[in-house]
Length: 256
Ligand SMILES: [Zn+2]
Image (tube, rainbow, N blue to C red; front, side, top):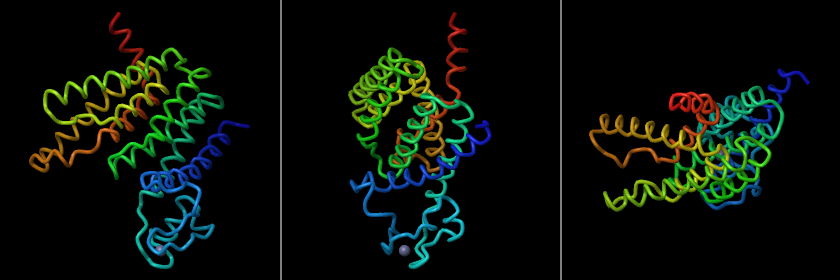
């Protein structure tokens, strides 16, 4: 199979997987089953026909409205599908077939789901953070960064933020980092290894501070509107997974 075909097929698979990620994003925080009932309009509860389940296209054809009750359908649905499709196509091209591709795609899907659930509900479900940490560590036996780096990564990811959170709590008497964020960092460490989880934490902190500062300036000081940290961790981890290794190599060369 030529590379072009593989990228195309992977992208198509990504669109379908994105559809499933939408189900996870919507149902996981509500403790609903992922399998039952079949996809339905969340307003009038009518079961969707097969063509209404076609990723991205269905939303475009229906112009973002339910066919029966005309309730608006969030543009987040097609966006998640499109982003997942692009991610699958890019990863197939970048990694080629193998365990690393499978590992990075699983990781990417978890980050997408965590990003949106944290954004909407300000929670990071254990099913993904803790379950994903185990999967990431197991996969590290057959993929980079290897199990030693993965183990150190999940310990650093879980431990350093725990100490930071404790210090923050004692100094400022407020919770700077939730337990969900700590478990998410362990997940990132397990998949990417210790150098990249540190990079992720640094990038997420800078990103979070910049956006927080922007919000303070724009809204004149309402910190409660700041975005949850898990969303920044998801973006930073995507960045670290895609381009982190050259950055870490450059930084290590700098230290020598
Ligand atoms: Zn409807």
